[in-house]
Length: 130
Image (cartoon, rainbow, N blue to C red; front, top):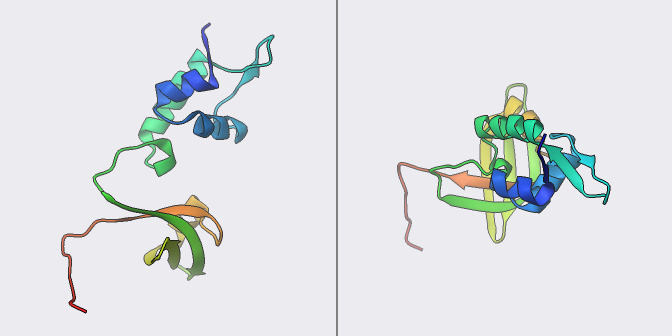
């Protein structure tokens, strides 16, 4: 069976080698070492993982989105309610606040200090004159 290096897998998955390495370190895709000590991914495992990634819609997975306004930053506050949550992200000079479900916050693992990207898409944009 054909095996792929982390770099080859990254190219096939459309992500950086660092991302592929993090996925392997986290156990999301199984690896083994060759005689030279290089980490390899079996072709069947890589194929199954590529299908899993295509079905997911997390940013790190390299999925596509129509949202063009992305603000990468760091989570500075999380307020959890029984059902809803409020998450604050500091993206450079911009403070963004999002209201989402508690379940989404837990699934994403959002907590203070975690790197996250706020994406903004709106059908109405209001501009106030200073």
